[in-house]
Amino acid sequence: MSVATQQRSAAVTVLVPILGDQLSHAIASLRNRSRSDTVVLMMEVADEARYVRHHKQKIIFILAAMRHFAAELAAAGWTVDYIRLDDADNSGSFAGELTRAVARHRPHAIAMVEPGEWRVRQAIDAWRARFDGSMDILEDDRFLCSISEFRRWAGQRSTLVMEYFYRDMRRKTGLLMTPDGAPVGGQWNLDDQNRAPPKKGQTYPAPLRFAPDAVTQEVIALVEDRFPDHFGNTATFALPVTARQAQQALAHFIDQALPHFGTFQDAMVAGEDLLFHSWLSPALNIGLLTAGEATAAVAAAYEAGKAPLNAAEGFVRQLIGWREYVRGYYWLEMPGVADANALGAERPLPEFFWTGETDMFCLAEAVRNTRDNAYAHHIQRLMVLGNFAMLAGVRPQDVGDWFLTVYADAFEWVELPNVLGMSQYADGGRLGTKPYAGGGAYINRMSNYCGHCSYDVKAKTGPQACPFNALYWDFLARHEDRFRSNRRMANMYANWDRMGPDKQQAYRKSAAAFLAGLIAAAPGWVRA
Image (cartoon, rainbow, N blue to C red; front, side, top):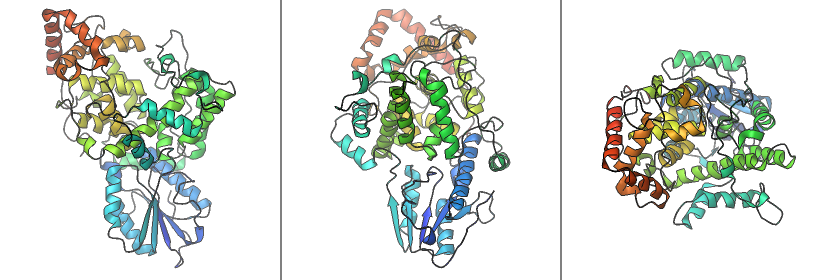
C-alpha cells in the first residue's frame, strides 16, 4: 500500500514531516493548519530500521502503523507525500528525504514536532541549519510534562526522586485526586499492595490480538525480505496498528485485566506472556494512544467501581509518574548518560540473550517471550534479564542496545533511562537510590519458574545451585566500596558479614566458575 502525494500545487507553502513515533491526529504540527497549503511528509527510511537490528515485529509495527496513519490522513483531506522503504529513489535517511521533499514541494516553511530521541534531534538540527526557509520545531505536547518543565523541576532538587515528581503530576492532572487536593484513598502510592506472587489456579484473560490486514501483511512480507536475519518471529504479530485498534486494546484491558493488574503486576508465570498487563506501551510510544487518554479511562473505571484503587493508582503511576519522569531524565542527562558505566562492567552480552539456550529457565522464558512477541513485562525485564546482566557485570551499553533492539515499545528516550539508570545502575545512582539486585529467592517468590528449572534455587553454591544466588553475593562483594555505606543496603551487607570468610569464598568461587562458562554473543548481532 502506498499513499501517493495528492493535490500538489504551487500553492503548497508548508511541509509537515511526521515521524514514525508521532502518529497522532492531534499532533501539534497539524493542529489549526490549513489542508490547502500543507503537505504532510512521512518517510520509511533504512537508517531507522537498521541503526540497531530491530526485532522484526518492531519494524512491522511501526511501518504498518505509519501506512495506516497516512491513509487516514489522506482520507481526511490532507495531502500526503509518503516515501516507502522500497521506493527506488529512497535515500535511506531523514536528511536525504527532507532534502528531496524540499526540492519537490519548494515550501517556504517547515513545521514539525520535536523528535523523541537525541540522535534524531541532532540530525534534524544539522539539516535545519542548511534550510533556507523557516523551520519550526514544536513542543511534543502529547506528553503531560514538557522538557523545559522537567528541567525546572529537576533544577530545584539535589536528587531526582520520582515519587515527588509523581505527586506533582497527580496535582497537575487531577487524576485520582479529591476536590480538596488530596490523593483519593489518603495515600499517594499503593505499591505495597501490588507485589503479590502468582496464585495457584489463577486464570488470566486472553490477550486481544489483531489479525494483520492486507496493509500489514504487505509490511510483514517486506520485513521478511529486507531483514531476514533480524531477531524475532513474524508469525505471531498481532499488535494494534491504528488508533481505533489501540482504543479497543485499552477497553479490553480495562474490562478484562485491570481489576487484577495492580495486585499481580510483578508476578511471572511460565507460558503466560501477558498475565494482567495491558501491552499498550507500543501504541502509547508511537502516538496511537496518549497517556492522557489511557489514564483518564483507567481513572474513570475506578470511579465507576470497575477496578480497585491499587490497580488504577499503579497504572496511573506508571504513565504520568515513571514514563514522564524517564523522558525528562533522558533529555536532562543526554548525551553523557549514554556512555555511563559507573560499575565498570565490561563483560560482553551472553549469547543466550539471543538464542534463549540456557538452563536457567527464568532467562530462557523471558527470551522466548521476547523473541515471539517483542515483549516481556517490567519484572521480566528488570529482575530477570536486567538483574542477571548487572550481577554478571555485562557492559551496560551492550545491555541497552539489546533492550533497544528487541522490544516493540523501545525508543531510546524510554529505554536508555530504564536500562542504564534503573536496571544497570550505570549512572551511579542518579536515577535510582540503590541497584535493583536480587538472588534466586526473589524469582522463586514472584514466579513459578524455579519449578521448571534445571538448577536448584535453594542450593546456595556449587554447580547445581541457582546461579543468581552466587552472582548476587559476588556482586555485593565486588562493589562493597561503593554500596556498603548505602543505608538501603545495610541489611544486605550485615548478612554478608555474618557468613564468615569460608562461606563468602564459596559464593565467590561458584560465581567465578559460572561466569567463566558464559559464551559471548557474536559481534554484529545488534549493530551491523
